[in-house]
Length: 177
Image (cartoon, rainbow, N blue to C red; front, side, top):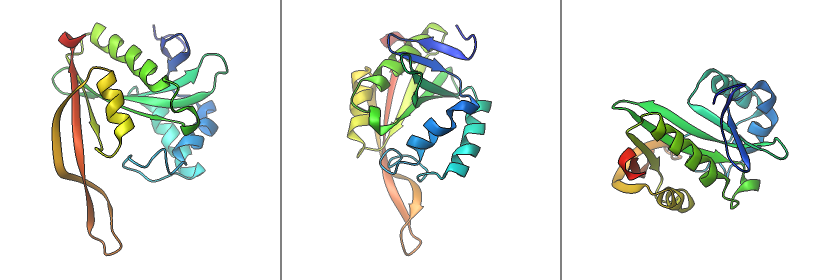
């Protein structure tokens, strides 16, 4: 279905590749401290978002989520290719659009498409403090497979010591569809 960059469509959304025209919409959410609170990066400046957008345009792992009615790009779903016919899924959305079911709607469409295309397993890593994210994974019928204790550090404290974080790992198999 990928013509003109469109990967999938739902009742309310267009799931597509990124374009240069997405700069302002992307900056709107990647510069928001609350939106990126659980991401491995800090809020980005406009210049940093320009560089990030170039990477997004050049990869097939990032899917832009656009509203069908207004054509505003409101977030993204990440589908990273992994070994053993698996994908890693992640999502980041503009805070102004939280609570409307857009993340669930876009993920459902992409998960269904991935399994239809022969993917065996889709998994996600999630900060246990990000309750809305792991509850979404559970609504999408993912199982919590692990709780890793202090397995990752993205930042250092004032004294330069790593700030360790836990990770939940969720997964769904093709046979679970």
